[in-house]
Image 1 (spheres, helix red, strand yellow):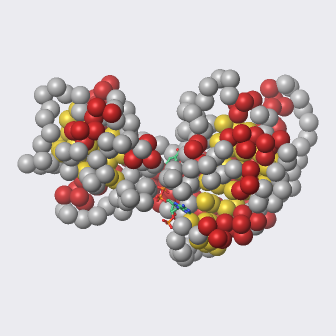
Image 2: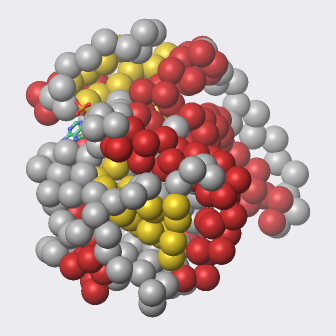
Length: 314
Ligand code: NDP
């Protein structure tokens, strides 16, 4: 039997569009809808998921592999009945990484040039010159999490001319990047930054890591960008850090909860730019090509690059 991809990602209505892109990019693979009443779990089924319903967990346990349309899989692992023994592969690929790098580049320059002030002035028709003479070559950017996305982002920032360092759990070498590893090195990493970028995965070890104590270890008036998960940040501490001058500004693509309720004070802080979790989502056609490659890799008995270590949580 050829491998079959059973699609629940993005809900029942999205299936037709997934079906079309798989037919175009991987005609050798069978695809079917998770919601097709005629579908029964077979031995060669791979599930493509984003946020499966709790009642999907039992059938997910019968899959040969599970591929998530997101790079972060914390929401899956948080489910007590998620089948942790089935291979789980995260979204990746060149376009996902490039989109993230483009977003972070925009966010760093937004902070560097204080673009938030321009936006607020424009709303009120104010023409006030806030020229800023900081340049990329004298701006130190640090990336927390140097994995598939973080390493790529760090290298793009370095190519642009920023002074880039990164922080991760285990030691590594990365061309043109100063790499810090382990909890003990966090204060030294933070002390040398003008802008901190969070690209960690959400795990028990990283939840709530970004609090006032951590932000206070940055040089006073640094900028902060969160493209990891909202759970990483203690949001009341972030607001305090913006109010007391610990931070000059922040750009958040991820918050808690999502969507952010209209009454949340984050919306209205003059030093905060908020985007609705849009930093990096590759085109469906590109995702389908990636998923097909992952399925072929698993079918050959090989290990895909972004196979999640469920015990580690990322
Ligand atoms: P990876 O799993 O490839 O990389 C994770 C990195 O974080 C690794 O370098 C790892 O270190 C490091 N890390 C993990 N735990 C710790 C810790 N306790 N202390 C220090 N470093 C740690 O993830 P990706 O790069 O693919 O994605 C990162 C996150 O980005 C996702 O989990 C998701 O939350 C977020 N994301 C957000 C998107 C958006 O649109 N806003 C889109 C896509 C992803 P080591 O290498 O040493 O293990």
